Structure formats: C-alpha cells, structure tokens
Length: 250
Image (cartoon, rainbow, N blue to C red; front, side, top):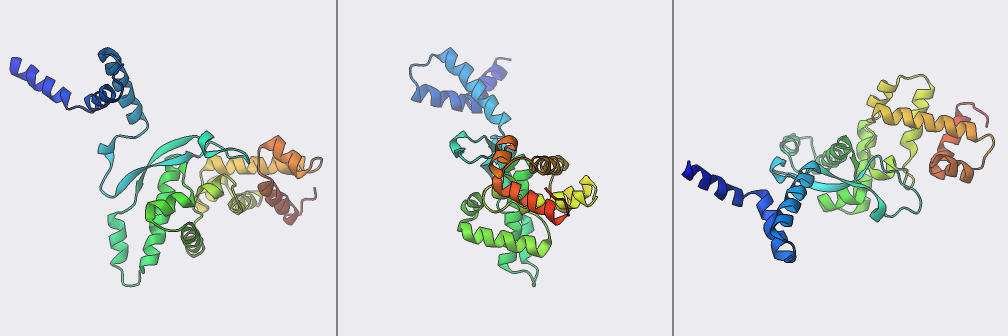
C-alpha cells in the first residue's frame, strides 16, 4: 500500500498540471502554493476545452488559430478584436503519398488537395483560415495560394471556404450569390449546401439576408442597407444585381 502511494505521488509530479505549476512558480514567485495549485488546474482544464491537448494530434498534424465562423467581420474591426478558436489541421498525410503515387498526378495537384483539406478541416471545426494562414502553413506566398484555390475550385466545382469568402472580405463574395440564386430557383437547401460545400444553416442565412436586401432596396441606399443589415456594401451590390438578373425590379 505504501509503495503504491509513492508511485502515485511520483506520477503526480510528472503530470501536465505539475508542469504548469512549476512554470508558474518559477515565473511568478509572489504566488502562493495553494493559489498556484488552483490556477494550474484551471489552466489545464481550459487548455483541454480549447483543444490544446497535444496528445490527440497525429503525426503530420498541428494546432492553429483560426477566426471563429460566427464572428462577423466589419470595416473597422481589428484582428485583435476578432474571436479566435483553435483548430487541428493535417499538413501531411498518407493521402498525399497516395496521390503522388499516381503517374498522372503532379505535385501542384497534390498541393491543391492539401490546401482544400486545410480549409475544409478548419471549417468543419467552426473556424475559417485566411489565404495568409494557408501560405504560412505550407510556406507559400499569398498570391500562390490564391491561384491554387482558384484552380482547384474551377477544376473540381467545389467551393472552398476561406475567410475572405465566408466573411465578405475583399472581392470573394460571389459564392453567396451563387447559393441564393439556386435557392431562388427552387433547389432544396440540403441540395444547395451539399453542392456548394456549405452548411444548411449558412445557406438559409444567405437567403434570408438576400430577401432583406431586396425588401430594403426599394427605400434605402447601399450605405443605409449596410448599416441596417450589417452586410458589406459589396455583398449588397451582388444581391441587388442578382435580383435584377432574376427579373425582380427594385
């Protein structure tokens, strides 16, 4: 019994919480032992809630900070004020080797698949990566990533979800108009979501926003509609253009 207690105590000294406690004790000497014990326990709990348990990572994976999908962007919002979440991403996998083993597959094609995987993994965990994020992860320039994403979407017909597109930053907003157009034409939401690689909730939200823009477009300017809806003026223009294309007069 005594031997078992000694083993338990020694194992406890090698725990993750003890590692955090040692660091707190070293860097913040004014903290008392009891406070350090409580704080180290809480920090470990928070880290695991955020998905920072490195033991769950497989070879070729990493943890990255992505922008929360639900945290909408607006003109004067800084990245410091943007909600971030931790996502687990696969940089290298056996799938890459399998693709490379095909005679017809070029290295450029493999990289495109890797980019698609990174963006899809982040999106499935509730986060969105920027093209800069992808460039940093794969050691590429932003322009190269941009070109490869465009090629992949054109060749596969799959709509990739990166931050500029999802949060209406820059010119990449046409995917929302494409989703709305299909829904206006009578396609079921699940069909549209599957076809354009989006969640059903997102498709429903885009369609609802479109109807709001069409309704407000009769009486308000672009700037006023943007203020009332929280949508970017560029997206509002796309929705108005789409409405006119479909024969709806504002």
